[in-house]
Image 1 (tube, rainbow, N blue to C red):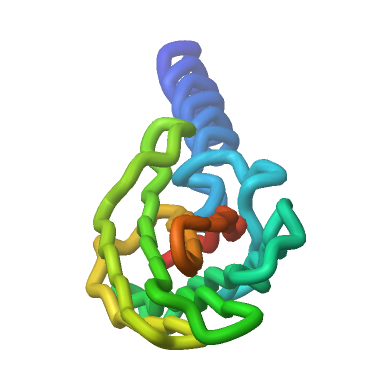
Image 2: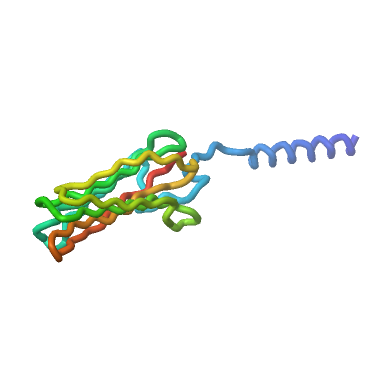
Length: 159
């Protein structure tokens, strides 16, 4: 009789331990990496930067990332001049966060001559489960003078 009681007691203890160790619901973000001040919980992020020189050519640059689906984002950039310029430049860098560090996942360079603005919108298929952000380089050149600025969005979770 003692043996039966002991077996039941052990079984109850094991059942209790299993209940305590059972899987609890976890959000996708917690499975990835801790959300820092570099990320947002929104489905889009945007940054606008005005020319630091308050120059005559470049007015501002804008970069934006938007989550379109669980594996797709839109990357957008705009270089806006004050006036018609010989050349406008726009470089966009889609960055992905792995192990707490952002690095370039894909990049694009665009130029256009004799315009006041240059913008591009690109839909990109990406692996889900990561944070993505967009870094932009924006410049306007007129004659021998080239003015530039940079942009950097917050990271958005694509899941």
